[in-house]
Image 1 (cartoon, helix red, strand yellow):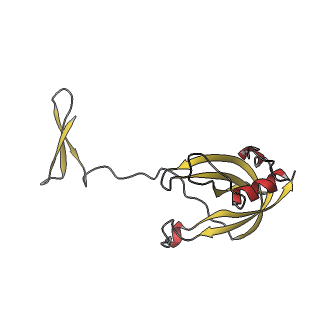
Image 2 (spheres, one colour):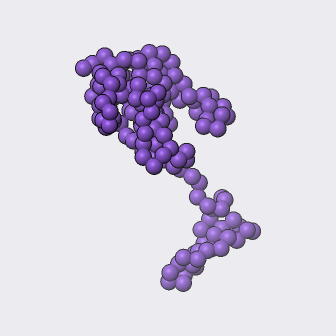
Image 3 (spheres, rainbow, N blue to C red):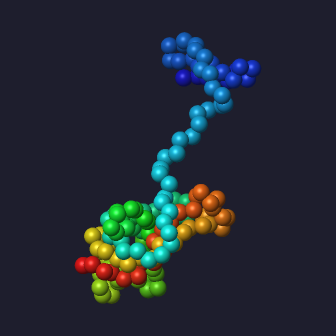
Length: 163
């Protein structure tokens, strides 16, 4: 498909595969963007009881590092809140002795890992924790979020309450 913009009418003249011309009216040059995801929710900062419903480990392309995203359901209403834990920027995810992932994993597991033990993300799923929820007020680059873009995350897993 070939097209050209007629600046005098802000119309786009399109020639399709059959060689037919048609005119498309547009207020600008190109389609308007569409929001691809729902915003992260915002809650009153504080301590909550929450069940871990899902855990994902992924490579964050923007930062070139590994992250673990834990999805919690706040009890009793089931509202979702995320927890993001850093797993290093090496070839594979790593868990250092002082990492927040290791600390959270020990709370979920009930004991420290053995040498060379895999620290599976599955240890979190289905367990209930006391968590501290707080607002994210700044972007990754240190700039302030606009008031409407502030959202809440789990900043700390305090203790396991069940099972």
